[in-house]
Length: 171
Image (cartoon, rainbow, N blue to C red; front, side):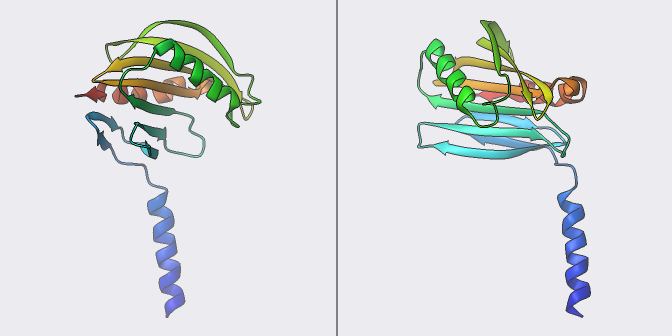
C-alpha cells in the first residue's frame, strides 16, 4: 500500500515542480520588484548587512533570461564599481572561457533612473549571450543591475525583463 502512495506523491511533486512560476513580489530594505509569471527568484543573499544580492531567472531548462540586482548600502564610486564588477565577471567560472567582451561605458537608464551602463557579450555553452549592467545611486544605495540572455531569446525574454524593470522601486 505504501508503494502506490509514494509513486503518486512522486508524480505529483514532479508535475508541480515543473509548473510555471507564479508572479512574486520581492521587498527588502526599501527595494522592491515583481517577478512575472514564468520567472522566479533563484538566489538571494544578505551581504554581511552591507548590501544584498538577488537573482531572478526565466523558468525552463532552455531559458536564458537572468537579472541580478546587487546593492551596497551607502554611496560607492560608480567607476570603481564598474571595474570591480568587470574583474569579478572575468574571474567567474561561467565567464572565464566565454570570450567575454565588454563594450565602452556609456550613459544609460534603468526604469527612468540615469545609470552608468556597460554592455557585454559572451559565448556560454556555445550560445551567444549579451547583457547590460546598470550602475547607479538611488535611495542611499549603490546598485548594479545585470541583465543577460542568449541572443536568440531576445523576443521571448523582453516582456519579462520589461515587467521587472518597470516594477523596480526604491524607497
